[in-house]
Picture 1 (cartoon, rainbow, N blue to C red):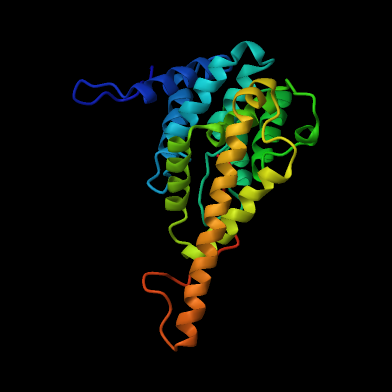
Picture 2 (tube, rainbow, N blue to C red; picture 1 turned 90 degrees about the horizontal axis):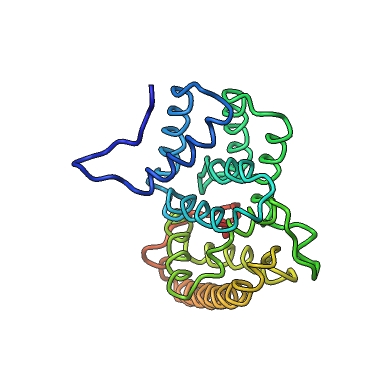
Length: 267
């Protein structure tokens, strides 16, 4: 039995259709069981369609796959990269600190069902794990661009940082919405700390293509966001101090929610 994306009222969700084709083509290299293939696609799609996801959603993995297809000839093991794309944000809870670990566990379950070989599983887990550490490798400090699949995967995931101003502003807004449970001043302070790490390393990207076409924009976008966040946090703190001094209540509309989260800037 072939499981296909649902069509409603005669219209086709083209992104869902594309993701289904990519997943089905990928999984069929390892199993002929269409029930397993269909169940895993349904599960993946449902995860990336969760209401809390404003950026880390179906659109995000769709864009990563478009990048992968564009650079397909540069990849040594494109199937490995595609598995990593599908599972790197499989679990995404802005209030949790072990999303990547839980995503890896889910991938391991899928790997057992599809009977994937150990080397492929190891490489996918390495890719997902690196997204939990700022998408950073030692090669990000080296002048020579890199061509390993893992570096292309990381650059695909961070491609939004090098987008135009309008797209980047929308991305930053979506990240804030995902962390709507965090009080504004705390969010600004912690998010700035996360994003500054991209500026502290020599290169945001590792591959020649992304360094050539996206590095400059990425640094400019991140610098602008960090400056805005720092200014906003300082302003809110000043207002809070003044109100406290006057014996007034805390700022209207803010909450006491605080977090130890990474305030994910990784995309």
